[in-house]
Structure formats: C-alpha cells, structure tokens
Amino acid sequence: MNKRIEIPRGEGYEEILDAIVARITGIEHFKHHTGCYFGNNVFEIRPYYFGECTCSRKKEFDKYLLENPHTKDCFITDLQILNDSYKKYPNYHNINKLKAERANEERRLCMIYSIPYKSGKNLNNICTCGVLSKFNVVHEAHCLQVLPNFYFKPEELKIYWYKTYFRDSYVTQELTKEKFKNIIGECLRSI
Image 1 (cartoon, rainbow, N blue to C red):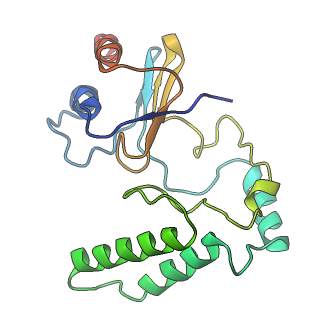
Image 2: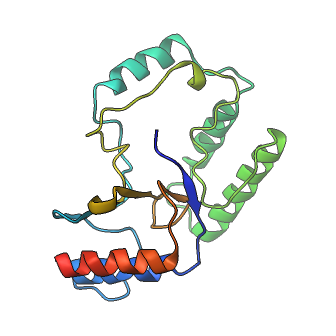
C-alpha cells in the first residue's frame, strides 16, 4: 500500500508542474490545470480519470452493491439524493448561484454526518453505513481509476489529484517544492 501524504494546494506546486504541461501542449499558463497525456522512460502524466473502473473488479463491485445497497441513513444515500435534485437544472441560467447553493447543501450534509467539509473534495466515496468497507476494492494495476496522475519513474514517486492538479491531492513519498523542481527539471530534459 502506498503512503498517502497530502500536498497543500496553492503552495506553488501547480506553477512548477505547468512547465511540463506547457512544453508538451505548447500552451503557456495552461488554463484548466487538468494535466495532459504524455509518457516516456522518465515520467508519465495524465489528467484525472472521470470514468468507470476499467478492470474486472467493476463487475464484481456492481454485483456487490446490488446485493448490499447503502442504508437510508448513509451519507452516500443522502448525497445521491442531493445529486439527483440538481440534475433537474441542466440549463440553469445562473450556474454560479447553483454551484454556491450546491456547495452549501454539501456543507450542511457533512455537518449532519460530522464529516469535515473541504471545498473541492470528492465526497462520493464516503460511506457511513459500512457497506463499502466490507468490499475490498483492489483494482488491477492497469485500471485507469488507480493510475497516478503524475509518475516519476526513477524514484517511483506518484502524485494523485482530483479533477485539477493539486486539488485534493496526495503523493506517495515526502516531497518539498525544491525536490519537485528538480524532478520537473529532469522530466523536461527527457522530453
């Protein structure tokens, strides 16, 4: 099991990673900070994967959830009800207001369940009824849901993020900004 060390957002790591994305894409100050697809013998980079499991565990997990649904008093159940209620506004004219309302509802729901709320954090896997803890989801190594968003091969350093780089992110070993600058320098020389 890899170590999970949180990387604080807004500490300058994003700007360091921008150098690689700019070199690969040719776009300076890559607006969306989602990453891009690239790999060589030194490093790999890929955007956050939004899709479903791509290994054989998906079918097993789906079958398990059908046979063992979340309880009515589970955080995931209430979050799904909240998600469904916002699906009725696909063409809402004031999307920023809708996002703010949704964030307030998520914050309220987290308070009810005594879950620390962090803006931008993925809440979709927080089960309070124990159903998820009873199924050991170990994806196959090639599954897109478990591949790191950034992988520096010489040190086997892996960075994972949610949606945009360094949002709700963690790394598999200690990483200072200085060390990261050196790693990115080595990556740039490999391109």
